[in-house]
Image (spheres, rainbow, N blue to C red):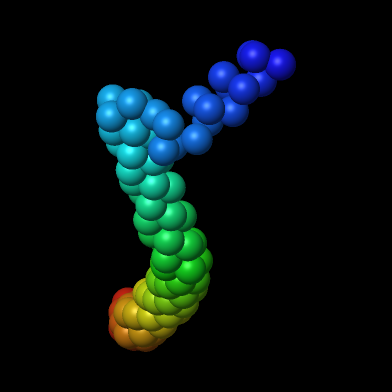
Length: 101
């Protein structure tokens, strides 16, 4: 019974010594600081997630644009090659006719 009374008395902040009360206030303050820090980190992470998704979508769009540019570049190169080959073929036919082969 005595032990329960002592425990009950020591759990009441008004019966604590000044040092105990200060320790309790400090621990509560720092505990709340930790809670607030965790909340700030959680808020920042919740902002990062959508930004990361948006960045991923943007990178995919850039990738698609580069793929399309590559395809057009290849098509242009093929057209240039064909355009350059036509006059050479005509020149070869002309020379063949003029030599009489």
